[in-house]
Structure formats: structure tokens, C-alpha cells
Length: 87
Image (cartoon, rainbow, N blue to C red):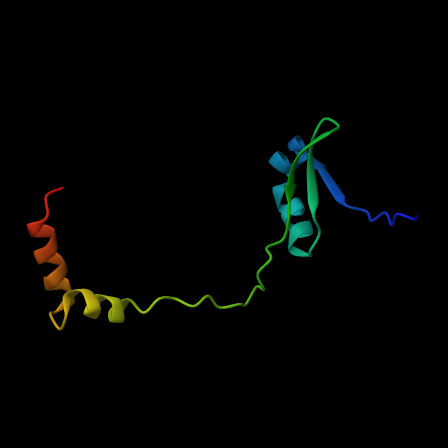
């Protein structure tokens, strides 16, 4: 069985501390960077799994507020709720 060795970037803690922009540039290009404390790996910095331009679906806050408070003016309803509750 053959193992394919791929070159993974490594950086020491000192390099991360003093030259983080270079390490971050590697990650931005899609590289995984293993952070070493002397010769021992202590962390891995990876690019995000999400696509850079992927949009997250945000909840419909206005719909939720209407379900909770009805047709009241929302800022007034929130203030009334705060006055009723004891912190």
C-alpha cells in the first residue's frame, strides 16, 4: 500500500507570533498550517469550510416579534416587557 505524502505547511509558535500575516496568507490560499512547539504539533490552522461568498439564512425577526407581541409597535412592546420583568 502506497501513502501519498503531501507537503503541509508548518510554522513555529514564534513564527506565528512574529509573522502572522504570512501564515494567514498560506491559509487564505487553502493551505493547512500545523503550528509547532519546538518539534511537537500543538495546533492546526485551516481555511474555513464555508464558501467565502456563501450567505447564511437569517431568521425573520420581524415575523418572530409579531408572533410574540402581536401588532404592537415593537420598541414599545419591548420596553413594556422590560418594565414588567424583574432583573
